[in-house]
View (cartoon, rainbow, N blue to C red):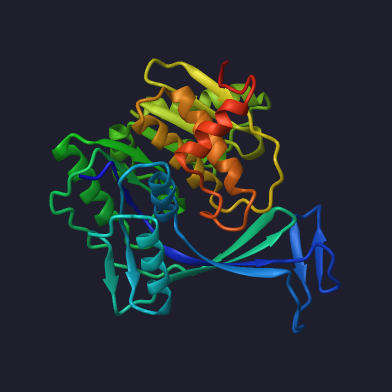
Length: 333
């Protein structure tokens, strides 16, 4: 029996680190634009090839923290799929439900990293996502982003969760948030733990066309938490990059936790690693405030390395880090 089944994407990420000083690169700070000289052969600091995808990153993170994690995703049958399969085996991820399609390629992203930030060039391959749960036994479902033609997979997940009265954690992707249809709202209503960043929370509630004009950030976050809770989610977690994270639990208690100031190499996988740490703490029977600490520690470690999985912590590493912390715990607000 699985502790958690993660449903979403599996892909290969190629990271290219751009040197901060290079005559062929420029940075327009006002427009937040990276400028590249067209037609040149340009040297870079290094490159890293790694496995990625939201569901894959979270499954690996939870497995490292001591739980039996499974992955439900669809990949191709090519040179990249072999790398994914080898990584999943090495991380003890259950792949009984992993689908391989020889008609489509494995998804690939190229990620440019510059001065601690990253720009993702991602290929979206249309897949059937013809998932069949086959009465797979698990304590928790984690549903996250899928590419094109995601609706049937989401419908089957909702049906599986409802039929078996399972706990559900949900992190909708860009396509799902943009659609904001009845299916997404039905899933949120069944969700025990909803994870979004602040921008996603605003778009999920109000859409791109209706921005919130609230200058007081504290009031904005409270409004977003209240709005998402009103959709039926039992517990809501909002991450806000360098500003930390917020949560509202089943008793409507609101908590805030800042970040730990460590060197940031690049931020890919920060949200996934936070989610992995958070859910692992919940699976350990810990409180939502403890879970926020676990999530933050995991994310802090991941952004200190290149790639979404290299810095993922083990349970003993998280517990050792907690022992060294002073006055680092969520506060009510």
